[in-house]
Amino acid sequence: MKKIIISVLALSSVLLLMLSSCKKDETKAYSSIGGTGTLSASTTSPALSKANSDNNAITFNWQSTTVTGNPSAITYTLQFDKKGNNFAAAREIAVTGTTTSVTQGALNTVLLNLGLPDGTAANVDVRLKSSIAPNAAPAYSNVVTLNVTPYSLISYVYVPGAYQGWDPSKAPFLSSATSNGIYTGVINVPASTSSLEFKITPAPNWNTSYGGAAGVLSTSGGNLVFPGTGSFRVDVNLNTLTYTITKQ
Image 1 (spheres, rainbow, N blue to C red):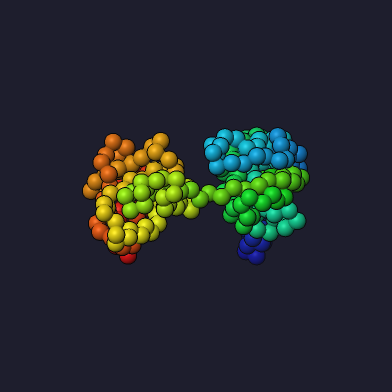
Image 2: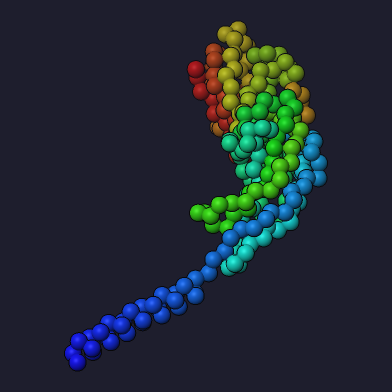
């Protein structure tokens, strides 16, 4: 009798475990990513220029990617790479919804990050990546090929002064590699210079000029002054309207 009771209890335990397992399986929810919609572009030859960097270069559209099973949020990403590189070195722009516009500046930055030379036309492949989880395989759209010519981000300010005849059209310049408003360069002031005064101009003309003193720039300030003759590193920040002069 004791053996029968033990067997019944053991069988009951097994049945309870099986029922519990079934309930857990029933509450599991799975989702998988389905087909992606067709990616289209408003143009395949967007024009890019530094002067219009804030303007839209291109608009992409696509249909929502389908998800089967448990509803899951989809993360969309536009991928760019050199044509024929199979997106092995893709640069990405995160997007939302089913349409997005990319500015000329943003697209140009992607192109330069791909190592494309400025001023030279190149073909670039674009596709949409759809993801529902970091560990789930993404889905990809069709590929759209763009023909684009990236522009250089470098920009300049000029340093006319007594040392060179106050001529901004022939003045040495300071440069900003990324046009972020911060410029640097080395200016040589000859020993024969009779005056050490100078100004900063955003263009090689007198339309706008910056003077100032004590490290602060102003369009209404007096002439800036080199601390002597020789070579000086000049750093100018037009975002904060500040400057430094360092003897080299």
